[in-house]
Length: 106
Image (tube, rainbow, N blue to C red; front, side, top):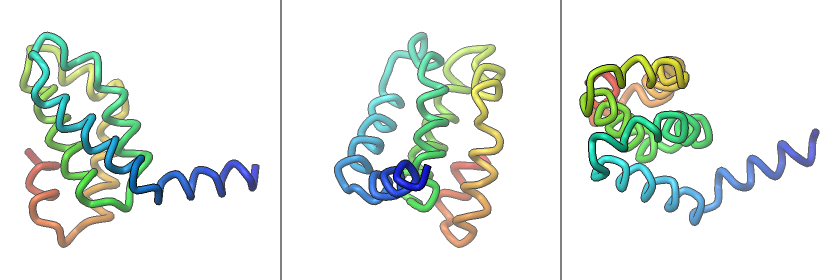
């Protein structure tokens, strides 16, 4: 268990992992609206994986908003994927980051 936690902590600090997560979130917002909802769980997982990274949290909140606005019914899928607690964590963790606050409250 300790090794797993150490490995997870090291991965979260890995700049390549962070860059990859940010690229996934950016690509999602450019995906066709009919395709976006299937990425809800992935976006939520990225938010959970990098809670201390404001840039990733900001991009994740923008991606969640894009998914919700893409098609009717997507908001329910995003909520079911666990987005609300992840967004609340981002809001709490990054109180002074205006862009993130604005995106999270979209």
